Image 1 (spheres, rainbow, N blue to C red):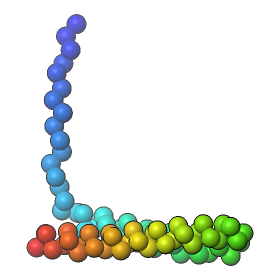
Image 2 (image 1 turned 90 degrees about the vertical axis):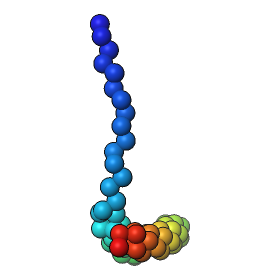
Image 3 (image 1 turned 30 degrees about the vertical axis):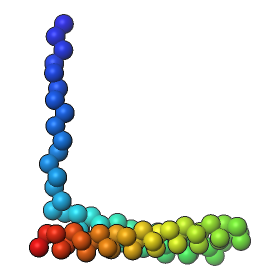
Image 4 (image 1 turned 45 degrees about the vertical axis):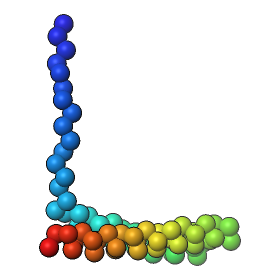
Length: 77
């Protein structure tokens, strides 16, 4: 029985849509923050604290994504 040789070839580095993808991620994260705020109305004090902490992490992630968007946009020019 012959075993076919497969060569793993990496996909080309296509970064042409990175800005668009990052902007979409930022929007999704903002929507998650808003949904979490709505959830807090019915949450226990412990759950509220967990939601606040998660939203803090989300806001940090947004800052990082926005910085990356700027870098990507600059690199594409």
